[in-house]
Image 1 (cartoon, one colour):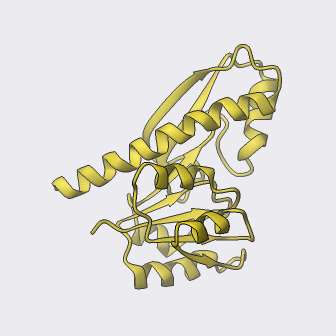
Image 2 (cartoon, rainbow, N blue to C red):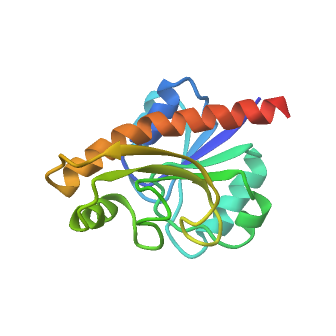
Length: 185
């Protein structure tokens, strides 16, 4: 069986889209109290809350070594992974980012902050990116991107809504493709 662990920090809407697309999640791990726990409880998925500290990558590694995931999905996870976990799980950790990387990526660029920059710069197009996680924040190999027209958006919040709806389609599609690819190998 293909084992997926999802890491979250917020409402868990991207994670919920995985569930709604019949993607079985072995475990959900959060780095803070968040609404995603309610989804985990509703769907009877194991939920682990970790402290958000400099040991988070080491603590995650211990969990991964026990649970043996085939894929780790960062779905709105705000802590930065570093160290051994990135080597041990190279090309098994993916992230969804709310911009067309490499634009608007890197440390401190997440959530509404990304959309504020996009809006400030007057971009007419934005989108989302699924990429592999490496030690360079938001700089891992791009797996897939989806573009959206934001020329009519009147605020960063409007851009956020448009991009998030696209994330809900892109992330499940990519995860299903990665599962299929893994099973066929």
